[in-house]
Image (cartoon, rainbow, N blue to C red; front, side):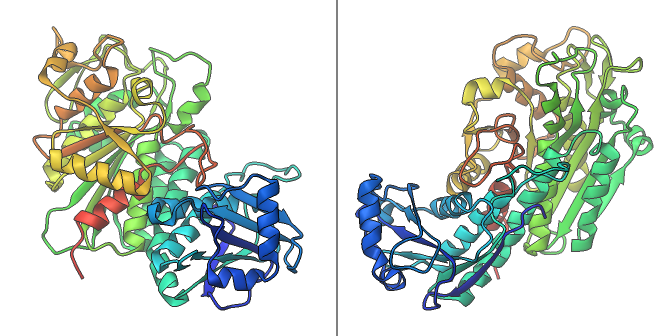
Length: 501
């Protein structure tokens, strides 16, 4: 994995070592164990807080070097705000804030996981550990020289002192598996396109076999036989052959219908014949963020041995403009038998998803399908980079995604679907066009297009163009590739679709 930090748990009574991290509320109140650990340095905190106008608001940080009365080199105090208002995602952020203040630290770190009213719960301490690891991630494998201060977020062991260390360690085990899944997704999105092309992406997905995931790779010959003309049309201009990968984790009851997740995997998108402008085209290495999420999610579910049957499917292509490339005006036949007139070759992700959605719906007959795709710039116009766009034919699934999005901080916002939008993708020559041909409602017409390939299966489409790559940095992510969706969908499965113990 691409994070170097090691996180462990010790009893709250254990003597603190090295750099200390403590928490206070918006009244600067400290817990009893924290006050004991700080001794006379508790007064130093008050003086430093007054000098720095630190009031303990949620997410505020007070960093004291060589604190008087302590042997520690540093004392970092993180404000929690009002403890009664804290939510799970806040503890994740506290972990991220901790790691963010430890850039290049080599001495041991002790985090005193205590609120003013007492020690944190095991799940809260585990969330802090997850936040530390997520913030510590750094993708620098291609840098041969490192600048001063460019050593990463944390290069030291971190001990989290908590009331019940054994319970916190147990709670962190599945969390760590999910963090590993996020790291895998980030790595995939951050890789350069000359390294990560469809065949290599498929090979990396195949590594999931080590965890007991069944992995099937469909090559071009197999996809031709299946009639995947929409997906194959996108990739026909590339020297790199396309692939579809089907991953299955059978952790639930034998014979029970699976839940399914489908990812767009355009490993590089030039726009094809309808070529994009040169500015920022390098970012199109991240146009496989949906597929990256699905691979990371399947890792998380298999590693923590989720008690559910899950299918993950990804369509992997390159969209290139050579002499054999798909042209505007071409008509392709999808696996469903529906024909599609190509209006713009840069509206390629929906063509990839069309065939993979149909394949999953017909072959695996899932309870529902959720697809993820860096699909449209239009969703960023509508929602910015704070929410992924959610489109769905099922209210229950939408409500559940919204709820777990708010809990994890990977938020979604439901957008409309409706028959009136279908008119924009009607074609006079084929069953439909691949784009509405208008600046208006571009993310909606893309979702309307996808809905024609779900065969009535309960379905949700997440347009993650604004959240999977190049999103603003946060307390728990400083990476260009965010790994968005892994935590969201793992929670969806855990809360609603796993068999009870």
